[in-house]
Amino acid sequence: MVEAAIASEDYRAISDDDRAAVHQALARIRTNVGDASSVDGLSPAMRTAVFNDQEVVNTILTRARADSRLVCERVRLTGSNRREQVCLTVAERRELRDNSKDVLRNWNRWNMRQPGD
Image (tube, rainbow, N blue to C red; front, side, top):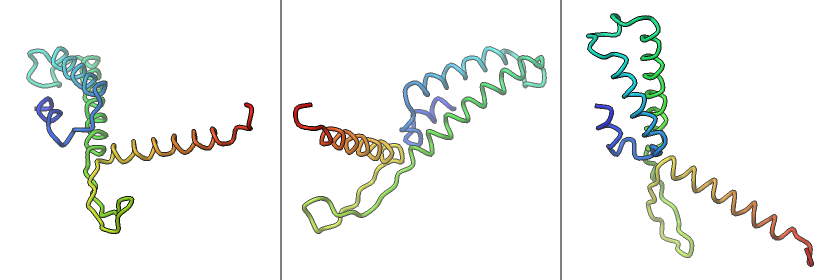
């Protein structure tokens, strides 16, 4: 069920590393639970390991779902007075913002150089 959810649009912003971490945690949970009908039948150490892996999965999926949320706004594109609707995920908006900061920072650094440097 979790594997199907990761493949859905609800989690499109999940990174490959996070996807691999979820699959590894789920594999460990399956191994630790084995044939037991519930976690109550497991030893305390195994139960702790299962709950820790479950927390890893929950944390990654919660963050990925929040980053996958689509935000739409009506903006005036450069060179036009007409407004258009632009929809980006939270992760895409964060990446654009970070890239813009980097470009501005590098531009300022480049222009602050003295002639002959």
